[in-house]
Length: 595
Ligand code: ATP
Image 1 (tube, rainbow, N blue to C red):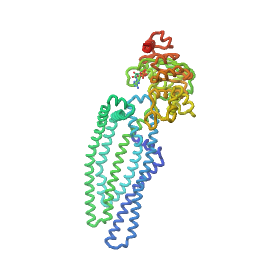
Image 2 (tube, rainbow, N blue to C red):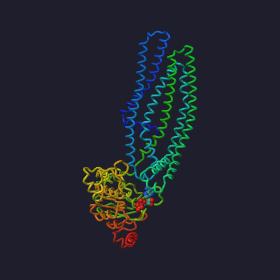
Image 3 (cartoon, protein in one colour):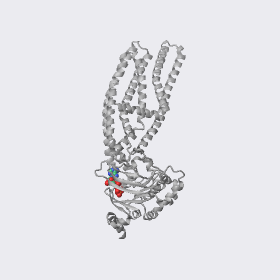
Image 4 (cartoon, rainbow, N blue to C red):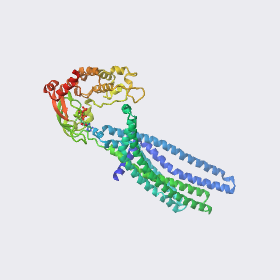
């Protein structure tokens, strides 16, 4: 409970921080609107009484008074309507500010979170719930608090008015609405638990939807004729969640109708009572209208009040999801004693490094040790699943090892600020990114801090042989590439790979890591790049992972990794003489070409 109140406070703070001015305006207009209906009802009562008097005396003498009253009624009616419209505008403005603020928080959190979180489906569930709720839930809390306050105030005023008719009417107004609140609270819990349980299924539904409508799956879906297959999976998953939800809402609607019947009974009693008093002459027509309207308005306020209470309760359940995500802790950060590193001077040392993915039974990297001298070109080879890409991620400190360490110039990576350390690295990942942006921008993303980058962008593109192609595009380096947006031009996979390589070269980092950088390059381009490899990397310390042994043989030193362990190290000639795994893999591959 304490936690819920804490989250409430935090939510209101977020709303306030995102737009203090608009939030104040929202509150002010809501309070103003709580007085207007009462004023309107009172004016109407006076108007009807004056009209009745004028009709019964058949004298038009009171007409100016009546006209004034009519004008006043119209003015209040107008202010009521106008403040409602203005209120909507203010709420919209405020919620846009809040959405921006909340998206900012969610995005800042997702880009900082440890990569390991992305391996857990629980993380995606939390992210999916947080991004669904975050943009609007805190505002809903504010609006519900304001609405609660406004309805309470208006209700007190209306109940006071009704008590003047008979105290029992005021009580009746309150009592008949109690079943409604119980109902909302009960079903808020049920719906929340249901939605929380359904998050994995909802993500599955979204996944099947993407398979059926996305660009990447579109080719295989057609070729293998999988449209109907995935449509069935989508329908099954979609209906599973929706049908259960509808079932809950159906039950709730049934009980809601019974509670409406109770309210109808209360209206009936009140109307009979008011009619009786009017006929017996105890009430004027104006007072009768006032009480009937006050009762009706009172019912509306109670409904608003109860629905604000129930919505606040619902908010309190969902708001936890947002803070659960925002409070996820990053473990990959600079640990004490924190050190600074601005340049790479002499050596990267990997010492007894071991790492196991969460949930995996056996270790992916097992007590691996090696070092890389500044300026050296190292190649890492090994069969599929040997742990090469995992080693790269550890070198980038995207994961922290379970034991052992990686030192740069004698400093453990754990003591460095990861962002600062990563500035010293440039990487082409095996699953590099395709950015549906300008061709030049795709290269520039390697270092967005560089000023006047045009010349360097072109130079990097020339090194990987993509310059001519970009130059020939309709808008040259400004042409949007990919197929997501209009006026864009799709590239082949190999061309995307050249762009990724250019991006890595554009970043002037002292350490270059290339994980399968040439898997999609044609033989000519690959030969062109690797025959000038040393010139292209310009003396940078490089780690090259490749299954192509002609490229690997260029390295100063080759490390053979098998099942997460180093089994051989040496130059190409040394390893060939050893006649171990490297020799076997090399001769198998070159043998295929010799045949
Ligand atoms: P390849 O030559 O096929 O690219 P690799 O040597 O780069 O392989 P890794 O990608 O490092 O191999 O994977 C090493 C092992 O770790 C594999 O058995 C793989 O199944 C497992 N693995 C990789 N990524 C994850 C992950 N995110 N979660 C759990 N296990 C993983």
